[in-house]
Length: 130
Image 1 (spheres, rainbow, N blue to C red):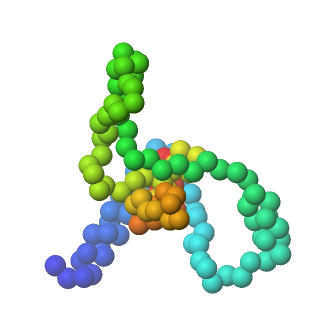
Image 2: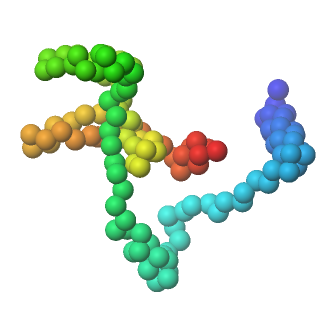
């Protein structure tokens, strides 16, 4: 199979998807490409400044567990709750409940922190919203 055959398969798949979406009445949103090259205009800077101070809730999730209320009421100091993650697995970093990154625990000046190891791309976050 040559490289052009692969592109032809890709083009055929894209055409098939577009045809299927047209039949369902679904329209694909056209999104502008994000780039760091474009300078920010004064108007864009003003718009950006209005949202920079909006508070968001950021949380780091080590894991989850479902337990009954009976077991919850029996928890006391020293109890262990098993989580759905394996030791050493990355933590999830959530902003307002949306996964944005994975990371690992670090200690900085006797305080816990998180080092981001993988940031979820904007495209992946948008796909999860659908």
